[in-house]
Length: 285
Image (cartoon, rainbow, N blue to C red):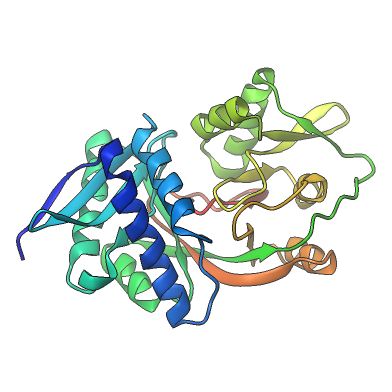
């Protein structure tokens, strides 16, 4: 088929957002799971944000002059994150998704990114097979959990709104846990007013850009993350992503009224350090 790939523009938001919503909703419905996005408007807003943010690379697929898919690369930090990659349900399983993935992988290589990461719904076997065939390795299984806010402070752990002066400490914690920092995302969260830090003995020991599907958190220890989660007024989107390997954190979430919505896979190419501490990835990585 005569497929053309081109850079995305703000004018593509409505159509790419519609496709994003319908693609994810269709796969979720097929497997009897709730959709990641509650409405087409949420999908459009998400895609518009990525298309207009200078830290994101975008690519749009056209077939006979009609938009049939898009993909994005989060370039705000050294390690890049893929997604959302979506293909119009009318042309799925025809190689469009593979072309869109190859494009962002080429982009990452051109930039010299040390690693590429993404998250994938555990029930979607086709996308899992696609990513494995492209060279991605499975690194961790995540439980997406959602529920009412816990609203209970933890003695000895002080959670507060982060300020610009905390950026260096947040990057230090992230490098300690992951080997790299995610300073670009933290800087955005500081501007949006969603970033929080946790302190022990007057020292920053963890942070969260938000407690949400599209946000990440890092802590020196599991209790640092528990304090951040316990202080959150809500959990945005489908929920937060808890590593299944951190059984203490997952059991704590379940014992505090949160429920598992779905399981997801963290997959990577290139640089990946086994985390030395506690973390919650975002849906991008």
